Image (cartoon, rainbow, N blue to C red; front, side, top):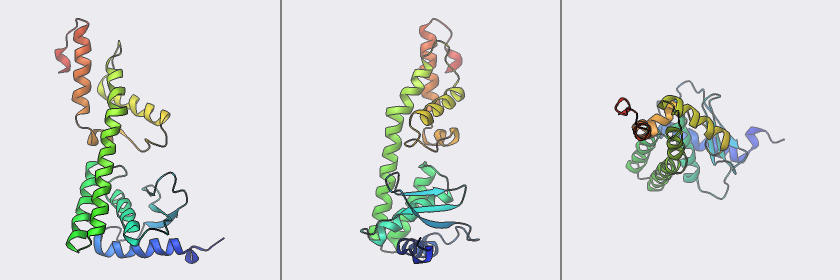
Length: 205
């Protein structure tokens, strides 16, 4: 088995990460509690931030240039700093890093980071319209509709059960941050259905 010190992919990742620490994240991880490793299965995702173990895993992409690897590392360090999901807070931290790269005349890294943010924000929209919204509306339309917090917990359980790989990591706090409109829309749908049955709907508006 190859020792970590002999692994060229790992040496490359850790060298780039060390540069990024000093240039873009000088206040992050002052005690050096976080470690970087090669991500063994690129088919699942390109990189991973494990906030529990404080390990960041980066895929081995020998054909890609250093800026591509740097963008992956920045993506995961931003998760380490703010939270583990692609929330608006994560996006703002990524934009801050992209702005810094632009000021340092690293247009390639800035472009990669902004493109990453745009992709993840479009993915949030896709999740909302294709899965989260229809499920919440289905729960709101039941004969005995749950309140929003109960409905949200049930929806997230369904997500984890039906799509364990694609929709990992969600919790109620993260969901409410990403989709602040969800509560009002759920309550409006619930109130409309209650009103349709001839019951009082004003309590839900």
